[in-house]
Length: 231
Image (tube, rainbow, N blue to C red; front, side, top):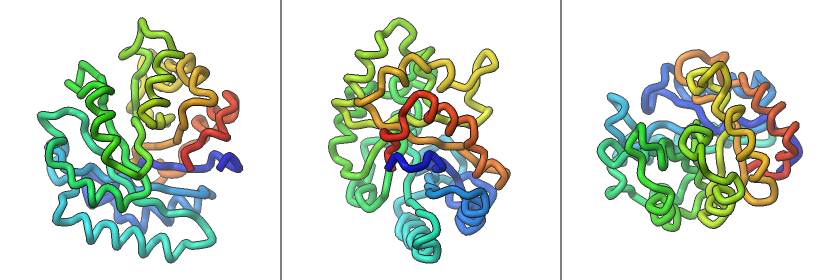
């Protein structure tokens, strides 16, 4: 931990709404020089037409673990999922925690986001306590959601809930010409010593996106957060 920020813990494959096989995503990550790549397909949500289901989960995990064995000693291949924090779409009351505990990480999208009817951090905390794997918040527009909040107070809350926060380099998650993480820089400053971070591209379509983490790496390094990378 802390040796390099060359990680991407947010990619999608044909197991949900991505265009490519995990093999292709992992190969692209290795070619880009990443030290770790995480597959995080949408799990049990009506947000996408064909999400990863409980029935498909064993095959999904076997596939990712086999890729991890293939790249052992070269690059870490991590197994994760992305969970929708909107109760109307995300089936949060039916989450199979025994399956989630087999993963390397779990991402939650839209927590506390009123525009997406996301559940509160307090409600998410109750779910998070049932998962032993690291859990994080992806493409989170903190600047908008917590515009009147003290960054230190949010940092304390996330620390207490043991949630990491993603630096999302996807151009989809921008506002006013800036990425969400850039708009929320004051919060990341407050995360020092309290909240872990990750980097993710949320790639779906183009394999070239998998290695497109440069600006996120620069941000993490500039803010002195290398020692707080979640892996």
